[in-house]
Length: 226
Image 1: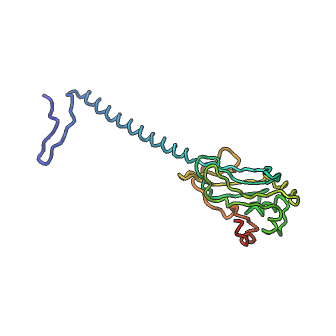
Image 2: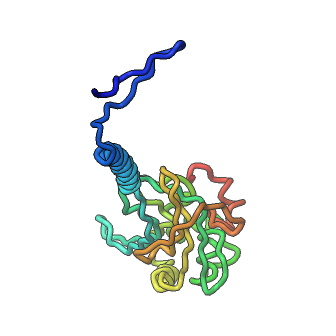
Image 3: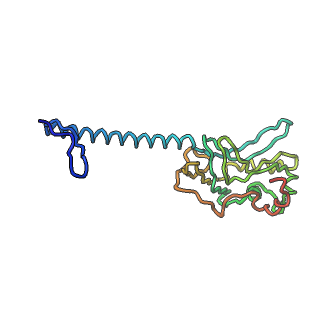
């Protein structure tokens, strides 16, 4: 006679698993049920990890340095240093350090003074006379496929030596960018390597490159250029 499927007590009714009457078979069935549950849990955890990696892949940013020395439609020429996001997701650039020959530059005025012979008395009005076209603040959010212009100059008869110096200096300018994705993954990059190094977090540095640098006080007088 098989055992009843339930036990009745004074306070409740307790369901019992149905048994075959064979101890070994009952243990095998119980073990199989536990194994199937564990496998299902493992599959669910693996699926969660796969989904997490897919989200990370679909929001992955990749910043790189771009130098452009191009002819313009009207026959002129411009020289541009910029950062491009070649990834598929936005990059949150939190720290950006620029060095030239081991010295940290706090803006393109300092950089051009160090690399290219720009006068140390140069102000914003002087920059306009030597072909300055514009710049952007690098630290911040850079959307996929967007670029941030560090500086751009238009070639004039008066600034040929300056622009030739800018072009020649591009390989001696070193970068250290720390940026994160929108899901919180962060990297440090020299903006030239294909393998940015993962880091736990990014923090701003007092040595970060900012707009204008040495000429920032003069720049404030001409807000239309911002």
